[in-house]
Length: 223
Image: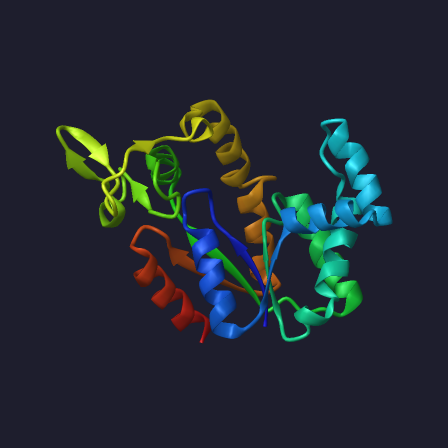
């Protein structure tokens, strides 16, 4: 089972991807890890990618796609893979699909964790970090993990520790730029998702409910 997974920041895509990976025993492939591994190992593609990154430029698709393809051919992907973090736009979707076709690699499913732009923004800006343990989930906009209150101040719902917000989670301009790309139906990520609708089984899942409810619906649709 070969899968692409999409979802805006705040949709729980990473959590759901991990659940799918564990359930079906497929390799969970993250684009960022592929870049880091190629650069650290000094592969030919890694050297080329590093040059662009060092100059603060985007790595072109003719480097990124072969790098991803090489990863999908490794032994741990023989029983299937779940690719997270690519493609990010329509052009990349087309390039990836053409490369998969050329190599005879079938794309079975495309998962889309659906979440409207405002809810996604709220979830990003609502994230809070516990001073005692970053793995204690707290979000002021999600009822299931809403922080506790003490003396009129939010504290960690798990341990009562002090909470803080990451600076980048509060950067509305940066969030807006990422969302402009993701929700763009002409050339952005959403356009890429739509491109796959005639080429694979696209499974849309509402990302608003809790993790358990979303995963149950997703696993049921994956069969």
